[in-house]
Image (cartoon, rainbow, N blue to C red):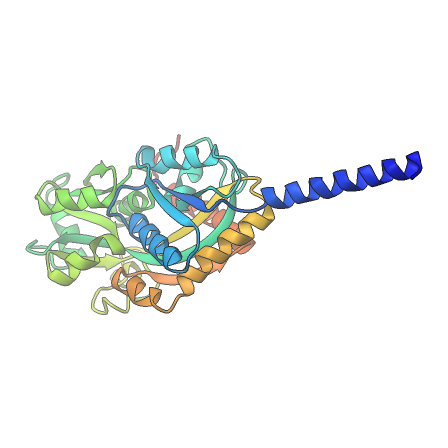
Length: 322
C-alpha cells in the first residue's frame, strides 16, 4: 500500500472514530434529573413524580426529582441553566419561569439559556378561602377589603410569581387595599390559610384540588378563560366583572442551552410518550391537570409570548419591577 493510500485509510479511520464518538456523545444519559424549583407537594412536584413513575414503567431512563425551591424559583432555574447540556438535567418550568425575566429578575434568558423540551399541561389559578370562611363570593371578599382597608391578607407562593401578579391585578382592578404575605410555595401558603394566618390564597389547582373536594377550602374565582369542567359553579375572573385578566398556569420542561438536537429528541420522546400513556390520563384528571403535550420548538415560541404578556400584566397592575 502506498504512503498516500495509507494516509487516506488513516484519515478515514480517524473520521469514523470521530463520528462514532459524536454519536455516542449524542445519547442522553440513562439517569435524568428534573430540577423542580418548587417545594414538595406543589403542582410541579406532583407532575414530575407522576412522569417519573410512568417513564419507569415504560423501561425508560431513571428520573430523579430534585426539589430546589427558593428565590421565586430563581435558585433552581439558575442552577439548571448552569448544568451540563448533555440531557442529564431538565428544568420543570411554570409561569414564574417567564415572570422573572418579565420583571428583570434573574440571570437567565428564557430561550437563550434553555432549549424547549415539552409543554406538558395547563391548570387554572384559583382564589381560595377557608371552607368555613364568611366570604362566599369574590364580591364578599372585596366588600370586606373596602370596609376595613388593610385587614384582608392575601398570600401565594412568591413573591414575583404568576400568583402574586394575579393578586396585584385583583387589588388594582377592585380598587382595594390589602396586605400581601408571600410564602416559599403554594402548599405553605395554604397551610397558613388553614391555620387562619391569611384570608385568601391564589393557588394552582393541583395543590388545592383535594381540599376543595373535601370542603376544607372554598374556591371563589378562577383566572381561566372558561369555567373549569370539574368546578362548574366557580365563575371566571371575567364573569365577575372585576377584571378581564386571563391566565392559566402552564407546566413544562426545558433543557440547558446547547443540548444536542438528538438528545432533545430523546427527551421529548420519553416525556411525550409518558404524557400520552393511557393510564396517565386518570392521574392527570385527579390532579386537575389538562394535558397539552406540545413538544418541540413551538414551546419556545409560547414561552417568548408569555414573557411579553406578563410584562403587560405587570405594568397594568403597577407591580414594581427591578
